[in-house]
Length: 248
Image 1 (spheres, rainbow, N blue to C red):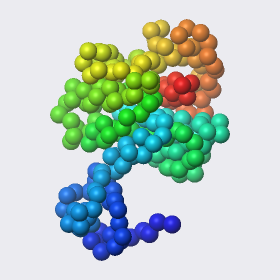
Image 2 (tube, rainbow, N blue to C red; image 1 turned 60 degrees about the horizontal axis):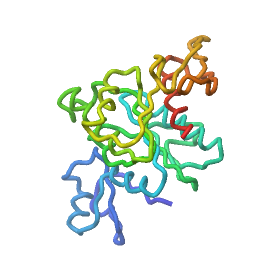
Image 3 (spheres, rainbow, N blue to C red; image 1 turned 120 degrees about the vertical axis):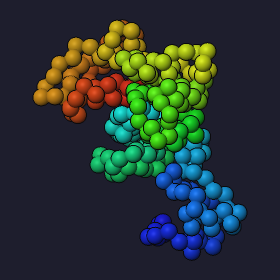
């Protein structure tokens, strides 16, 4: 039912308009954005609008330098398969979900939380994942230390009754969530990975033409067995993170 316009023109704004939402890719001189400001309309960045929507649901936000789209798709698909009818936004088209986004009647809002432009700092989820922290978007961040600090701030915004699922095998992620004193992370932090110290751990791993099969332990006790259809060890990590989120 949306009216789609091609091109940027002040006349594209409807006469009756309550709110204008724009992406981080739009600059301040955009003619539609200027027209909205001149008309004193409420103007919100896309990420702030998503944060407002998340506040109405149980937010599940997946962050990380790599693997966000895959893990967000896994979590949204699993919730849909379980009849939970989630709302979701993935930063890629997911054929199994019918596209990159969907509005469901269920209580969950599953969101790919991107660190670009520090967009994820507009979200206050109940459950969150940090898949890994690496150097990226250096047009927005001065260095890796600034990126780590942004992820720490994101983790601190997870609601106190919630849980952060963090990659225990990734050094930068451990730095981001490891200090309770710096950043004030109130939510419970549970790690995932292959090392013994991880709360969610993949063990007894085997490989079938690049596709991983392994048991999942939670605090040392067998939880389930996963057989990946997606190839690569990185997707085993994504699945572990998704398992931790879905458990809660």
